[in-house]
Image (cartoon, rainbow over all chains, first blue to last red; front, side):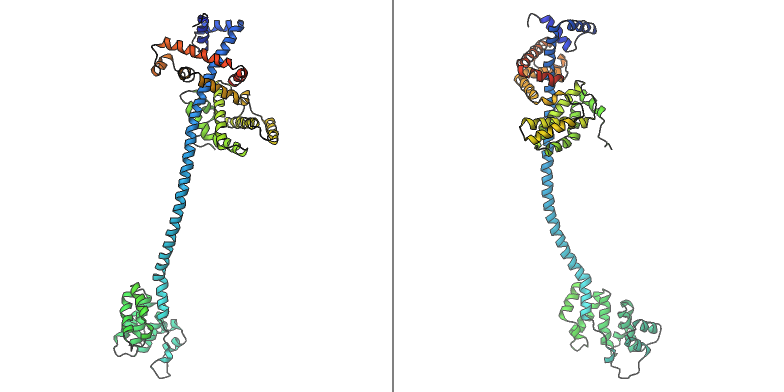
Length: 249
Length: 201
């Protein structure tokens, strides 16, 4: 330590705020009158502020490093997320395509395919080719010929009908998309082993079941028609029809 | 509208003044103001690294101002930092000798400056010089002075971290270190005024 140590100590105590209030007041007075002492204090204050500034800089630099790391991490994770997103997008696109294919297939099988089978299989019953040769038509047949199927149903409800009118009534129900009402009528006609409309009834009953999505009941009738070459509707039920209905079944 | 984690300028200054919460305050400055100030630098020919360098300098200068009770609150902290950032960056561009057009813009922008801007804005070299001096001081002295003047630890507390026999030995060592630093600072004759300006305004 130098020869001015006592003064240096006082300067340091003043600088470090390590003086009593009284001593500080006295030192302030000395500073007022002693230019050299004031300059000496300023040098020490400058050194002290240098340390403080350096400390703040160290602190900020440390936080800056952490901040940069976070930014870098976010950037990387952002890139990774982007990459994942990109991959995910491809996967999602593939999954979507797959789902669309499956959905189309499902839709085709459950909606379009039955409709197509029905349309391919259905044949309009031509009343003019009726096995009845007379020209006298019942009111039901008249309405049927006029394609007034609602009229047929209206006339047929609760009425005692002959075989033909029952058949036309059943067909009218089928054409009016009331398969459930058509089914018992067709079924009763099917039971008439020698009835003139048995084979017609079998065919249209199969279609009525089919239209009602009752494939398990439709399929045996269709197979019967398909297997019977002499059946009136044999040509309407192809191998493909059977395969497709089996798929639905 | 303030979000839940936003704090007022007054609260932020209090944080920066307290050594225990100073770090939180600095983190807050980074969190809230860095992107805006970076945007300015990126928009004015600067890189991300430039933005980080300048922001560090802005924060150091601002915190130092606050600790010296020299931040006059004539504008919000955000406005003050933005102005400080802008001026330090434009000074840096000037220093790098960019185009005359940019200098012209710089002069125009300085004229528009309304907030409190003290002389530390033109003291980047002084700041670098100051940091260099501290690094040359030696690790031991640097640690002692930092613990005492920056961390505000007592000699008793410092003894826990430093390998000295007793408080008096440490006190003497601290004196020698400060004296050494004082001499080093004053040996940099050309920078002395700049340092005075930087540290005292």
